Image 1 (cartoon, rainbow, N blue to C red):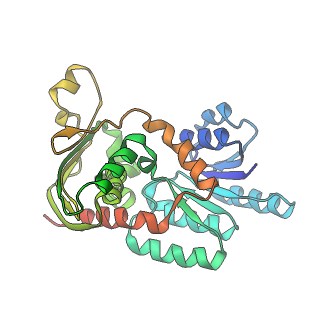
Image 2: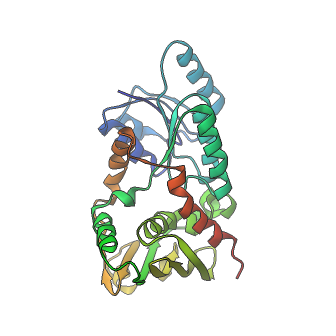
Length: 299
């Protein structure tokens, strides 16, 4: 059984990490979040210590380490702009790290963290769950067995409604979240470059606070992509059904269904990490470069 810490326990994605820790047979020792609405911990680890002040959290961890408790992993679900700092903390206390997407906001952050991995002799892992999705694995296998010189036409649309709260939170601040492409698009961009090869060109057509769209050219694909958090952009079919989210990926006009099972992939990701088959800093680099370029393009 491995001992885990959790930084960012009150966020939307944190329960998936708690569930993954539990389902892989491990233990959550302590958690931290400046917001104290974390009753969900009771569903998984009611005995875990919880702190709203990082200094007290850090002091507790130092105390239990000196008493002989080994911290094996630090899971990070904090706001995007804090990932880099919290990853460094995990490495400094001698633990491996599992960090939510996007692992960092900029490619050069990855370079510095690789240096720290080598210095502290611990590993940084990230959650790239679409790489574990059955439909995506089947697609990757199909592309690899197909003609190597074929360039596929792809359309990607992801619209997930967000209310006014979004623009007050850190998520609505591009400097903190990385913008829409980083916040809701990075998993899709990672999946595309993983299957179709490295990015060769990025064109951005729309770049507003609630919508990004453009064209990405990979070695084996031309991707027209559209991301939005504005419910006005939902298609009529979704609006008529009262659905807040619309997601579609089509290749050569054929839809790829990958919505089902999406929320269960954190546990699979943890299983892979714990057996040495997870994804790390180098694996995340290409997608971070893609979203960084999108964010820094002026149109």
